[in-house]
Image 1 (cartoon, rainbow, N blue to C red):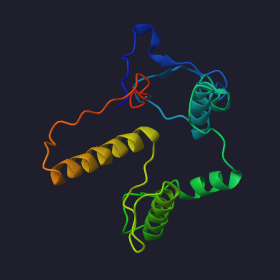
Image 2: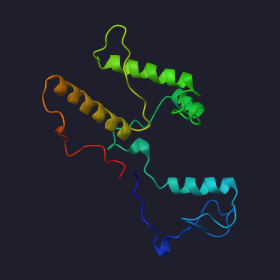
Image 3: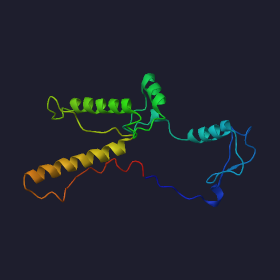
Image 4: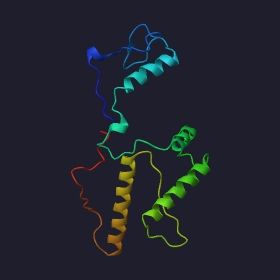
Length: 169
């Protein structure tokens, strides 16, 4: 969940520098403007603001890969408008996801029988993946404890102070 701050009275407008040929007055920051602006101006305003973010290639404090081969970028752009949840509409995408899950399962030596398929799901972010992995870990632990006739209602998961789940807060 992204937490947002409310606007201060002095921070209620967006002032464009490079889109100024399209926009002569400042735009409201937290409301739709009364009049439309050209798409080029909207792009320029947002692009100018994003330039203030750090450069991902210079971010040495993150475990996120910030460069991919150009073919990966092309595949992402070719698929960006697909709704991956709609498996009936995009069955090939679902099949590719299932193949990737199985490839990863084999890379990590998952205990699969010769004719068994791995169970998993693709995620759109690392936090989501970590939370789902934690849930799978908990379920496996509970099933093992049930089979042993031991209590399974109070798991004790220990993490380091560097736990990553809060990286988007």
